Length: 224
Image (cartoon, rainbow, N blue to C red):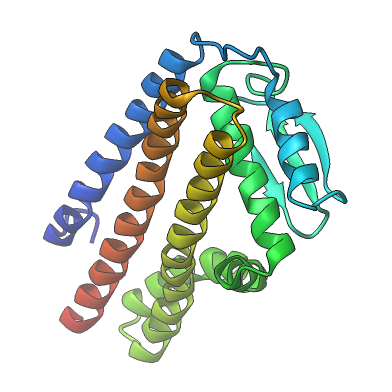
């Protein structure tokens, strides 16, 4: 199994994922040294965006790690990593505005975000169970077990696909608001856009990887 030719199915996604991770880091590092002419810090920009857009019940807080920024709909907390919180760089402002975009999605009832939030518990359980169940079914040549594993893994695939419009929409909201609200000038918006586009590639790579993994499971099941 471990030397099966089907491993080659996921190599393109792995390579794309490695490149995407490298690209987002290099792009972020590039614009982390380019600062906004207004001098506003990322957390203040995010707070002002939320306030201006009528989303005032979201709390912004710093968290540890690098590029660990996220918005938690269940607690309405916008978490900004140490390299973003307190920075006035184009990279930091772009990331903070993107996460504020998720909060606006939540506030406006954006359907894909609501669907993703509902899916989280099932995806966590399915992702943990998928491979053990499938491998057990493969070892004992019992197709129903393999099918259960495939169905469980399909939840992760669906989750990765639903994530794409959520992330793209948050970036579009962020860039529009940064430009229309004059948080960044036209040239600076281009820098923030480069950072967010690079980050979007990581989600595309993750979706492709999950799809190819699912194809591989189906091939292994049919061969068995």
